Image 1 (tube, rainbow, N blue to C red):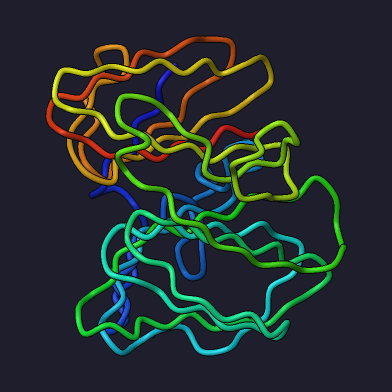
Image 2 (image 1 turned 120 degrees about the vertical axis):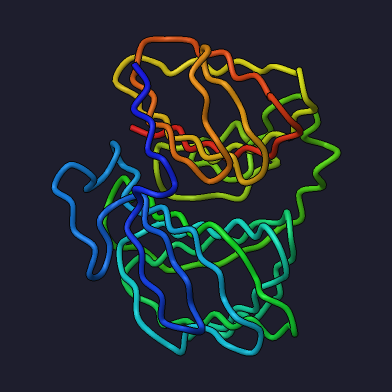
Amino acid sequence: MIDKRPFASLGHADHGWLNARHHFSFADYYDPNRMNWGALRVWNDDEIAGGAGFPPHPHQDMEIITYVRQGAITHQDSMGNKGRTGAGDVQVMSAGSGVRHAEYNLEPETTTLFQIWIMPRERGGQPSWGAKPFPKGDRSGKFVTLASGFADDNDALPIRADARVLGATLKAGESVTHEVGANRHAYLVPAVGTIEIDGERVDARDGAALTSGKTYTITAIEDAEIVLVDSE
């Protein structure tokens, strides 16, 4: 019911300015057993050196969510959007019919982030970008929806996928539950701290793929910050 993917088993690419771990096949890392988890296609754990970043490049037909763990990332795109997203906050880009963007760490220190790609429910459409702060205190002891493709999640950043990106912060000993509905997929990564999922230990930056039709209990062994994607 839980497919744990230890951090040490993830795909790895060290470009000097970028030290990246890949939960799923990406770029030069290919594993036929780790192509996607439902509509979740990419989960990269990136460390970006100060003053470095990704120069302008194109995307199409993908929902791209960036969860900043430490530092900040500055975004600029061909639609004229520009913004800085700091630690604990989230930005989303719906690539739609096509967009070019750049992502730079303009800070002096290393920025660490999760970059998450979710396949959209349909191709094409006008591209868009947005960012929003999500204070960690508001997520204390519970999941908060950070990005969502469902209209009733009014406080979340919108994406064009039948998916939700959730975040929670737990004190040691605290627990939350998450139900993975029928024909759904959930993937969870502790950004910080060690947790247990139904008694299975998951360390910081490990991945855990959760199968459908079950409610999971997530308990913090030590103070933890959790990110979870629930998708088709």
